[in-house]
Image (cartoon, rainbow, N blue to C red):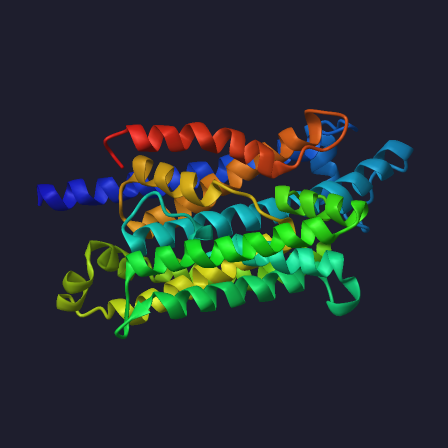
Length: 343
């Protein structure tokens, strides 16, 4: 009876932590909406969000400008940061649990290199490709298919083979990107470099309408499969003994992670380290149970990218690519992971 009481109290604390962090994410989003070259007060932000056409803002020039800044410029960036932060963090958690290695990240299957090649091709040869995000997404998916086909040995997914295949395929596409850089003119080279550094420069409602209907349901599916991810992370033989098919579930989860990563990379470029740092931090805070690690990773990833994006918009006159900031924060964290005994 005492154990049951303790267990219920333990889970209640985890749920309370998720609720508190969710509220903190909303507050951080409001603060981020107010910060920028045109500063707004929190009251102006709330007025701009909740007042509709039936209850218009005061007919002032500042009120109209505030509403324009909130809904057309800052709100799409913040929502895209929420979607991408969640997607990359959840993907990292899937890969680390499936491969049972906390140093694995979403780009381990060569997704970033494939997407970079696709984007570079669309930039250098615009007449041959419909759009940069679509080309990046298609080549990211092609890269993962190649990696998965090389990583399956005797009908089984071999973790070491899969990681080595990802490294080789990723290196191959990185070489092709270097060739395209060498062949491109100055304008195309500048565009490729900025795409590779990542950022939310081109955030708009069209991107939200395309990404949200895919990222949100997939994230929900991964959360529902969290208990299976727990079993898989113990080991293949143990999973089979508990009635869970590790091969089938790994393929489903890795495909979900691949789509989440590919879509994110296709629209905002390469934002490294999120998928490595955030899941590990979530496990340190809430323990190894993926039913709680997955939502906590999504919330921490959202907070991290909101913080980095706010810095990127306000640290200098021109916008700093967000990939630079995540890398600056990520490198010390990797050193910490390598040094700590908890890895």
